[in-house]
Length: 340
Image (cartoon, rainbow, N blue to C red; front, top):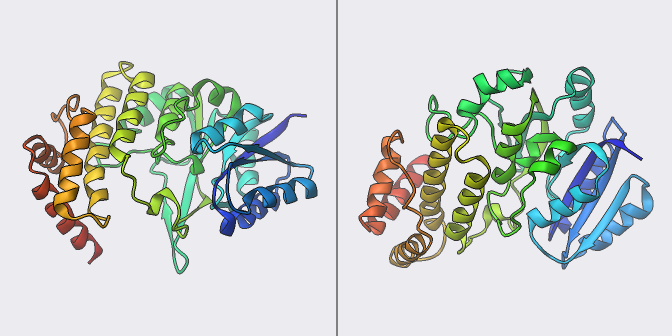
């Protein structure tokens, strides 16, 4: 039986947060949805929690699979979904109680858009922080998307680097299943930034979108075991895969989009430097690692520095000249100044 929404929860080692996540969905004020729990081979009690809710509520279905990563888990849920719209909720995050109802009443009932985009809240425990949508509330036709959104969706030159009009997180989006089925991320090896791999593609190929200014999704910052808080030695290799994937889907479509992908590429490379200073490696070890990984993955070869902000050009110059120690030390100083 078709539903308005399919809410898909990819699950891996989120035992401490999973019940809160599931309850936030089952207690939605709008009830015409199915909930698909995708146990991605989680080694803790998550599989048992999933089974418990499947037995308790007819709206809940559980898929148990071997561990394949977030993209794999989301895709497994998507391919079994029957809802008109797909809503992804990570297993350690949650929805506000009237999220689905607000999406339905504000966007779907009157406009039936391909995508609905709304604000998210970062949850730190003792305080919260809104991740705003920088787009005025309302319906955007294809022509309006072309004029207002696409030129700045990945990188908004009018703002400080690196910011785009659209925050590329699955948590702040609900997407029509018919659109997502044609543009979901098909590279399951991407393990970081995977939301970028399909959000921008879906938006570019959408015929319409509705932007809401409401805070509907809570992005949990308290899970110390998540990728957000972990060190990933394969970050640069992952970045290469991510950029190449986006290029394969959107590259060559428009000059402006190519420029945004170029800025995206530069941003992710520089982010890898700042990522290094947060780990426990020495500056010399980090410099050696970066030099080896950037060379092996050809990370610099296709970045065009023209039009990029001065600070970005500076970091790219330091990398090109093999001045990794200096790049790391400057990143460390900047991070300290930001914390003050």
